[in-house]
Image (cartoon, rainbow, N blue to C red; front, side):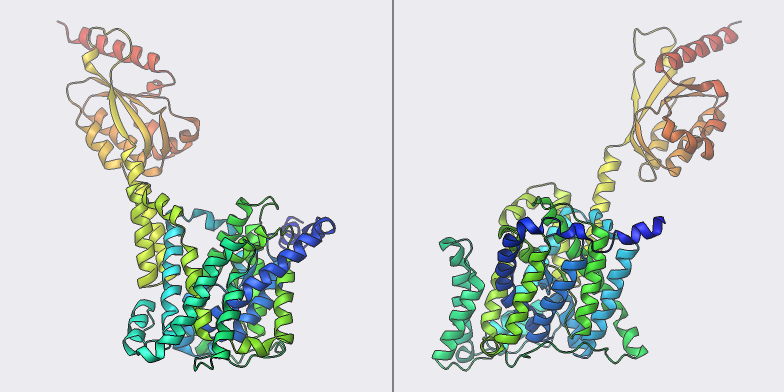
Length: 548
C-alpha cells in the first residue's frame, strides 16, 4: 500500500491544474510568450549540437509537453539547453548522427530510473560555488561553440570548444567573415536593446527577423538553416546493436547526470522565486526521463529544464504547467505553418542569439558574490569553471564537489580540537595535579592524531578530566581515539574521569570501548563540579598514602 502511494506521487493528478479555471488567461499568454522566446533557442541549440535545427524544434515540442505534464514543477519549461549541447556535440561528432536516438533513449531511461528510486534530493548536496562555476564554464563553452558560424567558417577538428574556435579562426578570411559578423552584431544589438525599450519585447525573435530580412534583401551568400519538416515525424525505434549500446553507455550516463542536475537546479530556483508551490524533485526526474524518452522516439535530443525559459514563463505570469504545454503548441504551429520562412534564417543569426544567451547566463552580481566570499569558495568556483571548459562537465561537478568537501573538512578540522582549561572556582591545594581537557567541535578521523598528540603530552598530573559536553560530532575513529587515550593515560598511572557524554554519543562510546577503558565505572560524570570534587579527593588520598 505504501509503495502504491509512493508511486502515485510520481504521476500527474487533478491537483496539478486546480488553479487553471482562474489562471488560464495568464497561462495562455505566458505560454505564447515563452514559445516565441524558445523558437530561436530550440533552432540554435539543435544546430549547435550537430543534431540539426529540426531536432531542436522537435525536442522543444515533444519533451516540452511530456515534461510539463509529468514533471514535478508547476512552471518549469523544458527543451534543448546550452549545457546539453555542450555534452551532446562531441558525442555526435564521435559516433555520428545515428547515435542521437540511442543515446537520448538511454539517458532518458537513466533519469527515469533515478526518479523512481527517489534520488532527486541529491542535487541539494551540490555546493553553490560548484553550481556557479559550472554555469560560467557552460556559458564560455556555448560562446566559443558559436565562433565558427559567427565568422563564416567551419568548426575546427578538435572536440574542445576553445581549441576548435582557435582552429576555426585560423582558417577564416576577411571576405567570408564580414557578413556573418554583421548579422551577429545586428542580432546582439537588438537582443540587448529590446528590453530597454520594453521588458516584454522578444529581442531574439526580432533580431532574427531583422537579420533574415537583411540577408534576403541583400542576397547574402551565408549559410542558412535549410529545409525543415512541415510535420512532426512518426515515432520510431532506432536500430540498436550491443556494440553501440556499450559504446554509448558512458556518454548516456554523463548526459543523464547533466539532465538531472540542470533540471533540478532550474526547478529549485523557479520554486524559490515564485509562489506557485514547491517542486517534487523525484517527480521532476520522472518527468524529464519520460521527456527524453519521448523525444528520442521522435528524433529529438535529450531534454532538461531550462532556467532561462522558465524565468520568462514566470515573469510572463504563468501559474500552472498549462503554460509550458501552450509553449510547445506554439512551436508545433511553427512546424505546420511556418517552416518555409524559418528555413531561411542564417546560422550566424542563431549564433548571435546563443552568444547573447551565454553572456546573460553569467550574472556580474553573482560573480562578485562568489569572488568576494571565502578563499575556499572562490577556489572551488574557479576550479569548477576551468575544468568545465577544459575537460568535461560531469568531471567538473565531481571535482568541484570533492574540492568543496576538502575545504569544508579542513574548516571543520580547524574549528575542532582539544583545549586545556583552568579548574573553575577558587584554586585549592593539589589542583596542579589535575588537568581538565575540553573536546570541541568534531572529533573524527581528520583530527584524531592532533587530539592524541596534545593529550598524550600530559606530564606531572595525577588526574585528567575529559569534558565531552561540547563535542558536536563524534565518529568511530574519534571514539576509538578517546578509548586509546584513556588506556594510555591509565597505563601511566594517571586516573581519567570523563564528564558530559551526550546521549546521542553514548551508544557509540560503549560499542568502541571508551567506558571499558576507564578504571572504574564511577569515573563517568554528568557535572563538572562532581568530577572536580572526585579528582581532588583522589589527589588527597594519593598524598595521604605517600606520607610516612
